[in-house]
Length: 364
Image 1 (cartoon, rainbow, N blue to C red):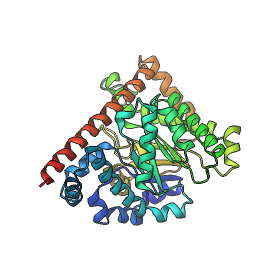
Image 2: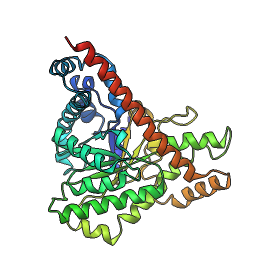
Image 3: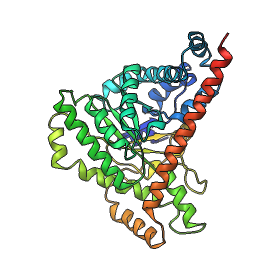
Image 4: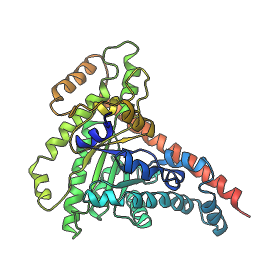
């Protein structure tokens, strides 16, 4: 028997779980995944919290206390979500220490309704950082145009960041620039940049879903765009983190901002359910997987080593062919970013409604 997740880790890919719940923490499931399935990080989002809070009774006691105290809705949501994230940070602390702060990280997202408001995004990021109060935390900030300066400012304040909702190579380059600027400002401000870390969450499956829809059934380019897009992103990563600007920061002890492959659950049953893992293997990357994908890789995934480096010409050819087929890639990525923000906002609204209902039921 081979251990595909161990092979993935050995190839330089950090295995993260894209899920969190109070029940997963209480039952010891997260600790088991860390000890037996090579999981070294956790990501969350509004959808994950909404689902967790809607299932079971794990939150009832805390909800009752919040209701008795008469806290407002915003404070209740922060209390519930940061409790879970703080607990997960503690579960992963050994991995954080063993990796010198590279892994063992847990991400929590700022209120997605602030995606177009730089100042309030920064304020919310700082509030979450103080509330969780764990150095192995990541604050997730969307890579919208208004999010870019927030990313720089939050890093400049000495706070580690997970940049989310990246779809295009151009926006990814802007994210890496925002990261470098944040490190430079943090160092100038007297922060210890050896403690700062960041990942850039490049979304994968949604690219294929949208482009496949535009291509139509039976087209030979179906299922090729997302992997090609991610591979070209890694090419950009190698370029930026081989630059003199980066080397100056590296000499000060800075850690590179790793590419993180997000949205790696396969949507189309015609494709291999491990495709967005096995086809995106390269050193210094992260793959955050829903539990179903994690189990699929463990069960029948085949890791053949680096599947990205040296594939750039082939990936560019896919892009050229898509353009020739009439696919406007800029339109695709702009739409996906807009829809991504809207989906997060909708999930946040559902989370607020769920907490509102639970508080009402718990009030005497």
